[in-house]
Length: 247
Image 1 (cartoon, rainbow, N blue to C red):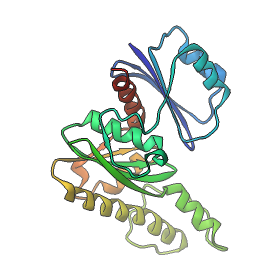
Image 2: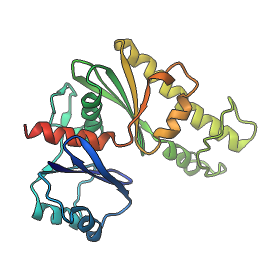
Image 3: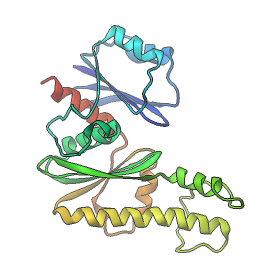
């Protein structure tokens, strides 16, 4: 059985083809056009197509998919067996919820701390009993660099530097990097420290475009052995959701 999972985020669109639980193809796009969709669906018959989107509008290529297949619009009402105690589930980001489902589906015997490194940094937690109570959202890595430049008259616009590992900056550029990159490192460690108080047997699951960078920030910490990188976590969550939704 083939499934098509589509994750429309703030910056990128990710599309994956699954055969049952196996991810057989995945691609990331800045923009999707009809030729991209034709290439994906050519010669394939999808039993299920699920689309998760953080955007309010739809592009033409989504109508093409809807004409050919039965589309499921992913939302927080599709629980996939997770007990959702979020007080405003209708406002819960689809990507966050799919990541929670994906984490519990992949590692059901663990308490899972899920950290998404995208436009924003998101922190979520699902326990071994499949309970989800909420999470946190903070500015992402690139957003912080842009904000420092945008809201000041003299500070330059810089990019992240994976090689930077000093405790403090010795000039303006390194001071900005220290504030932003060390700030994120301490933020990561602080959130993880609080979450692990919820119970033993935990994973720290990193996903999103900055997951590799966040892994380097945690590599020398006591949490490093528990880190797992799942670049397709949201897509895997969508696939798990549609499979359970149709059981």
